[in-house]
Length: 443
Ligand SMILES: *Cc1c(COP(=O)(O)O)cnc(C)c1O
Image (cartoon, rainbow, N blue to C red; front, side):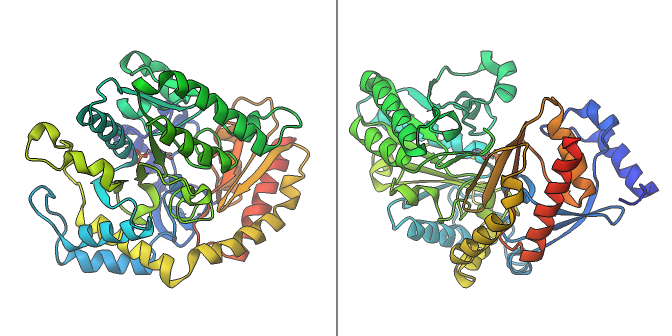
């Protein structure tokens, strides 16, 4: 990497002084300087000194079609000169309508009511509140509890954090949170020796069933991340769990909330992960890739059946929840442009070829002596690095930068979640750079 310029140094100092960065131990940046990014293009990010980094994690899992994508940029520019934003209470606009219609059609018209918000955590809050409210309106007032999986992540606002099970995010705030029962995770890393991923998933599902057999009368909803538990360290599980969860929730009249904030839009190899188990949820939460990763936008989609009791004159039967930027026109246009790209470029099919190629060249990673549990689901790859080093994540991040890679391990889990536009040359760089990182850190 080039020496740090005066400009870059200035940006670092000013950011340290004025910006409180998310998910960051600010004091550690005394030793590990922040990286001022000035430009993005395709899979690459460029810093203020002209170094570039391959964005192997799609900037916190949001980017689908690269930075500064020409088609998405054009759509936002076009919208910018028409309408940037209008409140969605009492008003309507074409981008919000078109997007809702489009999303509805992508769920085979089963989830036809779209409630917009601005970020993922808000989508979780909305789904939880809607589920609770639905039961209040349906004569089942005792259904007030939510259940979630071990190692779940659904966002960090207080309601979302209540159904999240990641110790570092939750520990300090525990006194502020609702108590929610935690179900065993189907993540196959927890399977017994010799137990197949499918058998383990079925075992986890039977424990869910046992719980609901006892507690269904007080349970409003079960929230899960379909197929891949992201923040848990890309914990992957067999789709049979989803299928069983859907059946069990239906049997016990408990809503199934699919949090596809990270896994939606092709990440797991299908447009929505729930498709792989034909497990249509009662609520589908989408965000992150929804706008191609460009602008804050989320949506909760639900069925006619859930919508119906809210459709009434009385305010007590109305779902009262609002965010200032609900259904922002620029964000909706970015989302429409993103969905157009899926169609025009047959992305889901093309990604299959990329998955096959990356799996093939990952062979030396998968068989590396320090690598455990190498796994893949669609456009997500992950493995654990065997090390005693407590600071592995930071060291790996730093070593990766020297290889022109943006990798940001979750504890000892290294993962790839690249933008879908990644080409073979870039995939080669990703794998060879990661091998160099692992070999450096193995010494
Ligand atoms: C990122 C994420 C969220 C929270 O979304 P934000 O936009 O960061 O609030 C919720 N659930 C899952 C599965 C996520 O990956």
